[in-house]
Image (cartoon, rainbow, N blue to C red; front, top):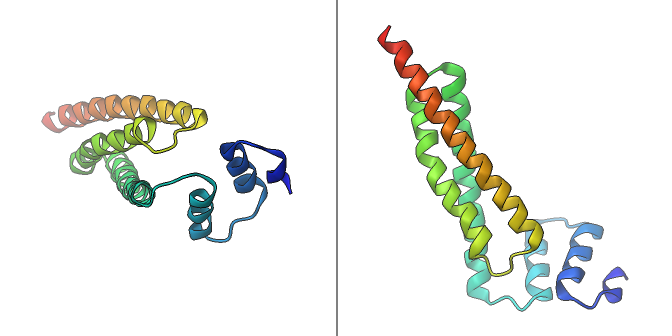
Length: 135
């Protein structure tokens, strides 16, 4: 009903995704593919990159939290190492995604700022843990 009032495919997608309940992710991606001229290879690439990003981010946050709470260098080092692939995925969705909305660009920019600040704080925490080990 609402989708007929909008002429742009992106506005129709916004209305359909926010006002129509979606039961499973397959309906979400099939709706995205039907509303926009999305090449199949790009859709598969975007979904695979999203799942990889989800896995990397969950593991990175787990090891960062574990390393910080247990005051261990190894989990915190793993989190530092996983920050770079996480930032690469965020920059992919900022620059190279098939359809980049302005809201996504703003959110990914904020995400990259947070990744940079987390990297700085993790390195400072690693330095603090190293100085405590020497005493």
